[in-house]
Amino acid sequence: MGAANHPAWYHNIRKNPMVTVETGAETYEAIAGIPQGQERDGLFSQVLDEAPGFAEHQAKTTREIPVVVLHRVGSELDRVKGMGDWLVEVHDWLREELAELRRQADKVVDGTAGSIERTPPDLGQEMRVHCLNFCGALKRHHTGEDMATFPMLARQFPALAPALAKLGAEHVVVARLQTEIQQLVDGYVPGESDPVRLRDELDRLASELETHFAYEEQTVVTALNATAPAPVF
Ligand SMILES: [Fe+2]
Ligand SMILES: [Fe+2]
Image (cartoon, rainbow, N blue to C red):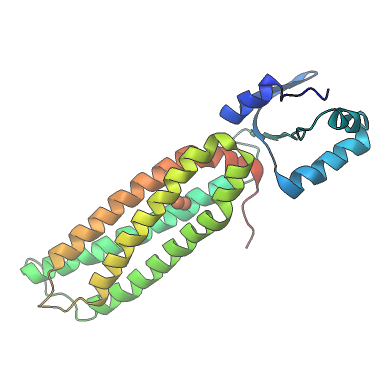
């Protein structure tokens, strides 16, 4: 009503955006987003079209009246595939690519140790190509998150901001590890380089990455599914 301070419920949803919505006979779960800037202004003018009284509320106070968007959290069965599901699919693909790279490294180690038939001569080349593809895809995925997905989520869901900052910091660690691995693979000389070191580094990346993916899936998938559909290719 144009009071000087935001209502208490607004502060509550900034801390925890998961809400239960009751409209007449219907009750459902939703996640409350707080759009900012132009998006907020566009929605507020739509509100004014339908309920001009809000202009009077705004005129009574210097604070900007916030707009809150309730994104319905659909049941697993009937909802369309969301952006969060898509994120998990990308992670699964990256997990499998890294697993394949580790299988190749295992073959190199075993071949060197003489426990299986000699390492195929083209395995080093195969690994280089595979490593390049995997690293490129991982870099694009994290750049997209850093530049678009995470800032969008942080703007709309203030409660997620600390988790998103942690995820962003993990991207830096993963990128460093990835560069080291790429250098090891590129510079690998059969008979000279230490294949065990290469495999150990890959194991380390795999474990860091799995921790990162798991934490990310646990924190952002619900919000992403509620806010955006999966991209169509
Ligand atoms: Fe990430
Ligand atoms: Fe991710």
